[in-house]
Length: 459
Image (cartoon, rainbow, N blue to C red; front, side):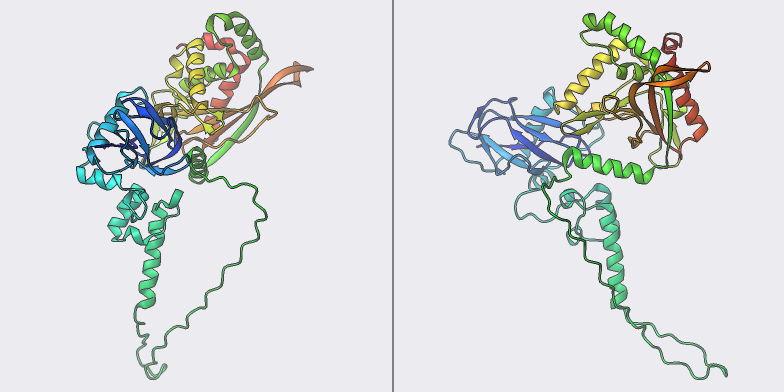
């Protein structure tokens, strides 16, 4: 009997994945543990190993298809066995998950308190995404599911506005409002009465209000010719949602200033000449600026903070975990380097370069893309002086770094040419005020202008 090859669980909050590519051809003989499929979640591209030995028979799934977690996408069996999903049910899920968890591609451990799914639940989940299925709870967010249950609404009667029709909390609320309006429209009109008095005369007859004729919506303006249509899914979809969430939920304020980076440039050139060969890489500005920011966060811990999950408190964070924005072919990725204030320049540089390489090849592990407490983003390699980055939630702030360029400046009443850099600090005004944020930014400028101070501060 063929074994079902099922998309394994890829994290607590991952309900679906996009097929990137099949790594072997249909009918190929595979060994257990061989990587046969790559899928993309909202955070990373993940290779999936075979959960059995035999001949692979692919289901009707191609690159670009979005499939639910636990969906059967192939079967592995004898040479002449066709694709026949459902033959091994929960056993396939168990072996598939075990095979995935035993490899080096493990992204996120299951919580110790999580209860295992029953065989009935696994069978129901495995059927998700098959042609002709009814709307499933996996097509609604957990919040939407709970809210619909509390309000007594049937999810199958709600149209989803999320990615690929997923039902969101807002969809449930709108459906609730529509239901209430329908109930009001169908309810009998209440009599409008007033007590009879000498002034008012006899009791008036109740009159139903005249319905207001709805105003038709304006026709949308012609969009013109579309040369290409790119679905907002995968990493691009996640970026779109997170940027919108950040802009609409934070009280953003931007502080912009210039710092004299002449001494930083000199230090970088000295480090580059001295350590490129023994370290195997040239120390860069990102490395130095990361250590500078980590030092500043240690001196001003109120900037290393976030809003609590319930929104009732400001949480100062013990660890300094820097998110470093990286441009990739798949979109903006933000690998997170942990405990940066405890790292030396060489150690940070090695970790950072490894993470950048994995991000650009789509091999980042989920834990490498989460846990940030502050984010740095740089457009210094382009002709960009200043910009206003969007806060990378749940961080309190983000630092934007422009290019370093020679400029005439006044120093000691003389006009001289110095290497200047523009810094843009965007912070959430709900969590701190302008003056404390300005002190933090001023300290960063001080370290840029006199980088030797890095070696004098206590680590």
